[in-house]
Image (cartoon, rainbow, N blue to C red; front, top):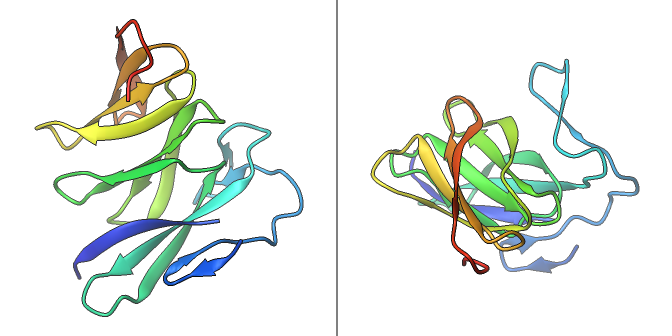
Length: 153
């Protein structure tokens, strides 16, 4: 299976990009074990869809907490990361199990995420406080915050 994209599914249908309107109250996303909740208490729910490249078929829809601004897949295809500017953090999705594994607070208004040479580390630009967070995806922690002085993109 080759993955082509993660697509935010959150009100209208436009080609293969859909939006979900049935959310009537604010809740946190239940983690796969069912024992705890992931994400800010006041976050709504968005859906990320995993699309099969050859057929365009939606293979899996994964709930994440809050509105999504940007998604990125690690170079090795193991992780997907979604930024949540209104939730001040990122969702981590394990693409081998197709499950949400965690929410990591990164800083004010995380905008974009990018991978370097290590596929287990993602860099997140936090426009609200002028930092870039280095996030260890396996441990689900911010290793450090780099001060940029302005709103990084």
